[in-house]
Image (tube, rainbow, N blue to C red):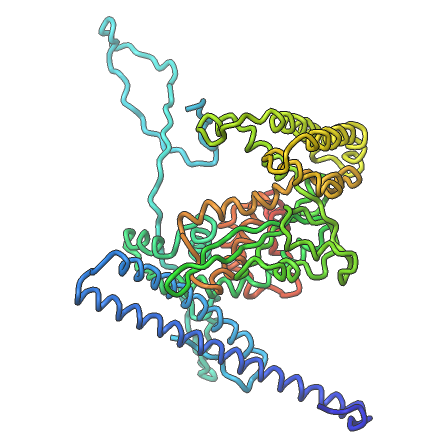
Length: 541
């Protein structure tokens, strides 16, 4: 380090020192990226060799028990994640090496059926008509019309190899050979086209089909794509799409209000699975007629500690719609750096506690032995508030606020007075009393929507974003590693944001993957789902 006194006063010398320092920094970054790539590659190789050894042992000594078979399945998944991580680090090393010429990048070795869509092609099969009248036998027949019966059919997926032919030419004057440059590939030294890569990514993260099942399905179509090969493509694409993830993240936290929630994700660990977390924050301004497009960003963490949302929401100071998770509490402190976040509680969570007690079907199954008339009454009162909220959904914040003050505020005040009166008559251990306490202790945050038309009544936007993950867990069972969870967060962000904007995520990913590498980095926002949608509409017009 240079002290202020030892630095020269000459501006040109100072500029030269800055250039030298920048070159040294670029070289250090490239060397660090190479080191990470080499470590990831070695780790993947070790996992591959261990898996091979275990398979050979199994073939030699026979399947000894069911646990051994499960262990092999777990090792397959761990290898898949390591392969993807190794490719991700390799792409990062190549990007870092591109900034310096002194470091060479590391390279690793029965309702009424709707008519079928009009855009589908039709194949007409003419059924031969009669040649004579079935009644009198006359052959003097004239065509009166026709009846068409449509059957939906599918053509099996077609695979093709695209050959880019680069012709060579020689100059007869100077004998120099001329040839066009090599074609663009999505990934360096890649062989898969953007449509195939988009299908692999969407099947894994959008349809919850693990890579081993995809590999088996491709094999039945006589296409050999191993799990290791597919994992390479996933890791490389995740690294390539990371800048779009950062843009979506910035867009979400630029909103005046975000919805936040999390869900557990089993993560493969030694001898057992541990519980990680996937967090989501959703920006959706449509309920109060906001012009900004909707988007969702996901994060992965190893645990559920309060440090995670504090890190995610660092620098954010808007409205947070969330449940009563205690990990959010420090975000609402008045002395929080950058300003406090405004807390808005979820009425769906408060209603759910009463609904579970009032659920007639649950009582019929014998889960609750005591009727809860107070819970039934609470649900009715809360539903009256929800009915009015449905009427004003999609209207401007000012319109929503005016209706709430006129029609909703009296209902909320009556509900509070009723609950406080009934709570005094219930025992401390009453289940209905506990449901009332959940809302009464947080009444300020529950009633905050009456003073701000931007606040929603529920946190359902975040819960909807997590619903697909909760359903998909039954298919992929667990994430293979923490790196796998982070990659999943990137892909869930892009796919869910595309869905929120009414796009086909696979079609959008295919186009983005085909353009992102040679796209102007300063115009990368043109590839975001809402901008891509507008471009597609203009082209169609």
